[in-house]
Length: 145
Image 1: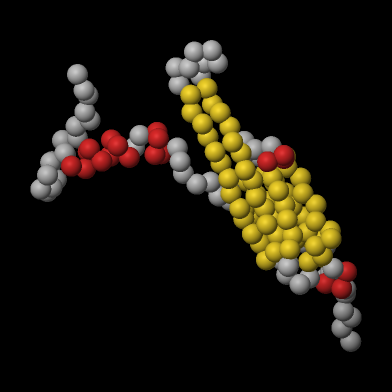
Image 2 (image 1 turned 180 degrees about the vertical axis):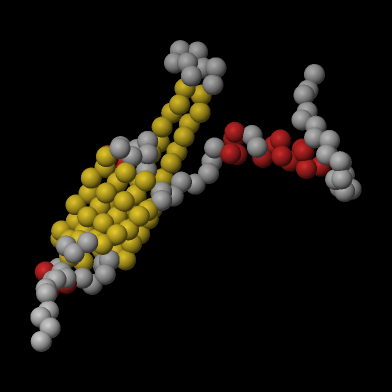
């Protein structure tokens, strides 16, 4: 006996009733839906002394990340191959998972690529890029005469 999902919507003007339901049941299978690409969200800010990048990447470890700087381009990448299983001895279900991403950022001329620091904590990768000394903003009070 095969169970087929049936959606009886009134007002559907399809020439082939059930056509969409067949493809919905195929493409909503976990084989297709678990293969989505992962691109972490990023916040970029600037202070007087540095540029700051915060990248949301929960579930990763700091060993998964690689940071690379070349020609004023900062590249952040991660690659993870993990196995999820519900039962270690007899597999009732076992799925392999592979996640990777690459994000690149053009560094401004005012950035000092020798002063880049990164910290991964609580699912957020924080990257601080120091500014060159001549690029730091200096605040001063101007006297009015």
